[in-house]
Length: 256
Image (cartoon, rainbow, N blue to C red; front, side):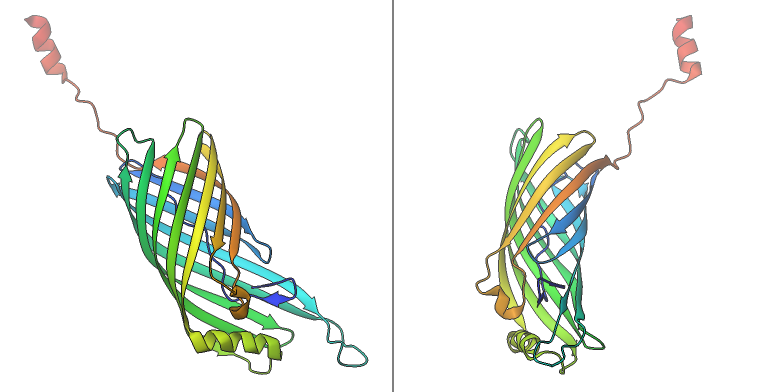
């Protein structure tokens, strides 16, 4: 991921805040993401197979680019295009603890995911970093007649376990990657907020994720994520058929 004359090797995704509340419900949410550095999109889904327990999945894709000119060479060569892309796929399970009137819910989500960050530095220079992430996240959602609001806190364990790096890239970029290599794993606290307005059958949400890691630029991490999303909820629970009386039974009743 790259933007604003800087490469990024990790960015937080949107926190998973409860979107289903009844057995059989399936939520699908698509969002456009952006931050002060990079842009992309996310697809989130959650399904409640049993009451008060749901399964979630999330896929995020981010990208960015910028041009860089080497002013230390005369005459200056044409600017080089630097690009970056990254993706993260994660799965998790959520336990719901609703209030007696179902107007709000406290939840705990735990999950794991795999991701890759690929950056290019001009012609034929590239660094690809693979990482895994495990997380636990308590959250609280409040439901209104027209609007919903929620907040969550996520603690993630991030591990960069594999990398393919061209060591002829710029010294500053190489230094950032070496900082990641030296540490290898990170504990990342994030806080997230969401606010949504319902226009049945769709809910429009604004989501904010803020990373609380100090000095993220030292490792080339983005520390924030803002998204606008559209969410809809489907009912996958089969409808129970009402018992129907047979023709013979109805005729017998008429004779009586």
